[in-house]
Length: 265
Length: 245
Image 1 (cartoon, each protein chain N blue to C red):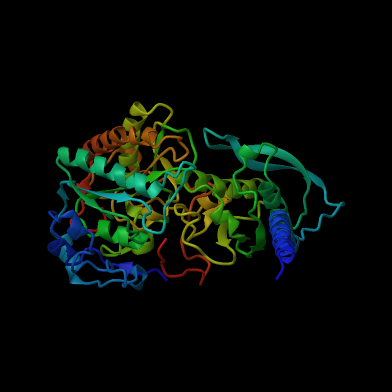
Image 2: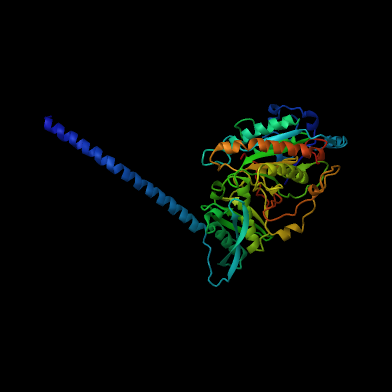
């Protein structure tokens, strides 16, 4: 049985958009199911709080980007023959992406700052507690044409019935798929301009990290750890950062932020 | 002890050291060879145990379509026609085509699944849901990444779709267990669409976000294609609590 999560609870009032990244590392106080010990499938509180937020109406103002350097800790991710580890590269990429986004006026929250490995749900909880956020998870592949980058959005998911603002945690991405595709296409377009051989539009894939994310969410995967020299990947970081920042800025006007964190768009 | 005994003793020790120096590398090689043989025989025994696919010569030889990578750089799949004696029983037939897929194409670079992976079991439920249980090597030996993991699953679902019409959706297990991802990226929690036509029939459009002025293309829900993940708990108690990757 799916657990239902009411992410429109008091989190909206308690989670300030001006969270510092270090604060955002921890589940927001009052945000349901953000604690690693609280299983997202066990359900969350429902009640008048959701409808109270529903009456506030929607506000525009995408202002937060949650950056997720994938893997970390005991999970190195993809590994190249030259000792390149995906978990380390994406952390370095995140620094560049963050800097570029902040220059564009976005607040950036990272799911990890160092060599930790939050669970998929912990990373989703960090995102789902934000209001007016988009989610970008960064990956390096083991295969593919080196020097290219692909954007993925989650594959089609069964539709979610609008049950008073409740979103099943296991399919939290479902209501955002259209928005994610629009966001992904924009970022992929900028990546294609920068990195020849990259696709023109975002691809669909069943990426685990995206499924439980209640926000426009994309995965950016850069090819690949098979490069002989790590510098080849490092040189791609500014271009990837620029494409994500420009894509986010271009997406901003079309995204009317839900009235509460995790609420249906 | 007389000096001559000393010489004999020292000489004996020198001979023993020399003999050991010569013999130890030989012994080491023999031990390594024995360990390798044992490992190979275990692997062989496991394959023999898990792949007793009876090939009935009376089965009609069919031109099966098996999906491997068409271009190692471009990472796209293409069907390769392979003439095989295929059973009419959907479970046996599925095992036969999946084992052909696992065996790989002539060009090893175009394979989608690791060479040491094997199919441990295959079940087909009355509602068209298939369960394929692969050995752990499928998860541990596959190159980690969204592209490679998606290609692996797509090659499985598209091969089944092309050859076994009874299979409508597929659940993938690793060594009998439900796992969260294939190799850190691809979601294995739910079932994958295999029969596209059946999957499209019950599909309902995703509720259009109200009050948004998103682009028209964004509001459309893409039709489920082979390899698309569907509802996560369609098989009853296959679900398990989330665990760290």
